[in-house]
Length: 200
Image (cartoon, rainbow, N blue to C red):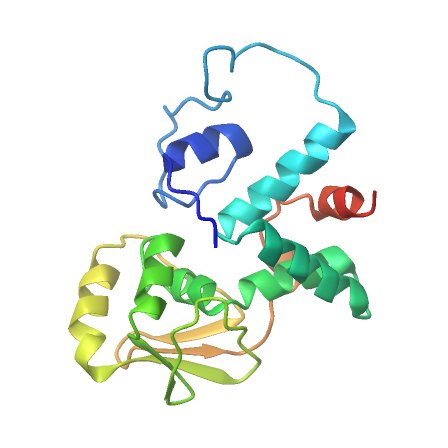
């Protein structure tokens, strides 16, 4: 799978991806697009806006083009609001839940934690970052990995509280209570633009 390996801050400047490199991006960081002519003003086309929003959401969750298109296709087949269903699937990814719970500083680190088999789901080893959790699933840290995760947790100085997750830091356990509602997910995402992008 093709992965982005360039500067994370460039993604923030080009697409508004906020949490790849640091949970607390400084306010002094330049927000205009990177490159020699990044600061030049030019009214983007509708297609450019749709593409940018698709890239913003895709790169936020660190998924490939093929994976992202598959999430859209799966969501479009279900009953409900396609954009909301797509975001709910992305939020249900195991690596994202590890990140949301504060067991990793970044989603990149969360993916690595899952890949290296530090995580159990309902008592069974799962090393696939894209594994989709269901309501009631219990995520725990392998006994031999608890000190490693504890050190990561102690380095994060932000209070984390998501209504759809129950996190017990003493037992290193996350309960995925339910999928989040749209109003509980990132308000900056304009998923309707993504729907328009794929509807062409």
